[in-house]
Image 1 (cartoon, rainbow over the protein chains, first blue to last red):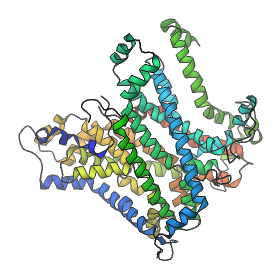
Image 2 (image 1 turned 180 degrees about the vertical axis):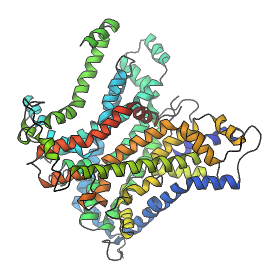
Image 3 (image 1 turned 45 degrees about the vertical axis):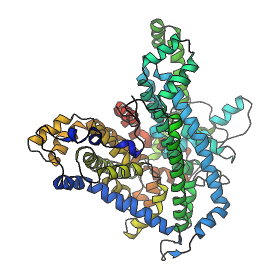
Length: 325
Length: 286
């Protein structure tokens, strides 16, 4: 049954799980030792270089920079915790935290709910299923592009489609793009539009739920809602967990869409000043690379905490079948 | 509609409701795409406020306008730059990620499990924390305004997701094949190249297409690292449109937006099975 691979602990390579016996060739000669190590490191060498020079090294450097004042041209000047205290005192930084949290908190649940609802609808094996699946998936591939953001800006402008549609229902708020209250919803709508990617993963999970469970429940007189909450949801909880984790982490990192939908201003009135927009502005427009590094590290810690909380919560609501752990 | 009629005859009214629901939803979801196609044939002034999805008398001026380029740079320049970055990324990811995945899946070396855990950790690492230090690194190496910062990571297997996808796939391959090859005296390089790589084609294709699409759509990378307009990718060309004439040339901007998506849509139509199945299994194991 569905078993999700998310925690490093569950990810022991297959050979380890099967024990050394499975690894030994039939002849009884087992390949291990020096030559095997050498081969492994040679194959791994691109990754090792990439990890050291593009990930681990930069992370350490960025941690150092976050305690300095640095503009890329003069040598970094150690200022202790000043970047962090400045940050907490900065109303625009607080605004960026607010905008990002709001975006994550409304965009992600709505997107996942839409993905699950449509997946349940499509899970019935019917003629045309593959076509619908592909069509609903398509926005996930183009949604992050500059093109999609440009179209979004056009659709949510004053007098454009969304404005006219809401007028039909007697709502007079005008276009969402120029409205500091509404533009974040336009941005959230753009992420919800890409519900196809998590939907496809839900569909794969739904396919693995044994039909007999539903038949048995039906015999016992359970209605569709009961069946959903007592069979479907627990059975696909590993997939749900995977989607929640990835979509949440992904949402924190939104940049391009916010930048283009707001025409490069992250406005109006900082209404779309998502975290990365502010980091970009501080680092590359104002040349405050120390401050921007501190922002990056703080986000890393936040995302790490969110991930840890999600993993810990697994015990309460994620059900792994036998064979899992 | 005849399609629906057949469905109803065969499966009863439940099927009709199912198809109706799915079609209504489909109309909502695909509306922005259809709208863009229609808008690209409208005069600029009618794009925002025009009530019709498709213009009564379509014009092709917007597309003709694209042949003039943006700020004296021909559109083809942006497309060639994007193609260079995207194809370069694909080659890098297919080679470097498959080598790494092979080591994780098929070679028993000291420290493998630790490295695997680290690799999975980088899958969850937010990119934010790397933006500044990587920029400083590439600036010191005088690589700003070249394509190298956009490509180097692809050749060093930093896309953990694709490594993970390939490891999963390689573990699923029948063990007997490489054991037989081993007994015949094949080294790891032979097994990797002649046995594992050909069998991994589905995973390689999925990774290749996702890499292409991600590189093609990428906005932040080019925004950070490319300064000269003649090095701009399509995303940056579109940004120039916005910077230049926000309202005046709406038509050209919409037409360019659509043209920019064509390679992505073409890949999707050609390989949608690979993409969706590859995506679907990313969350599952056996």
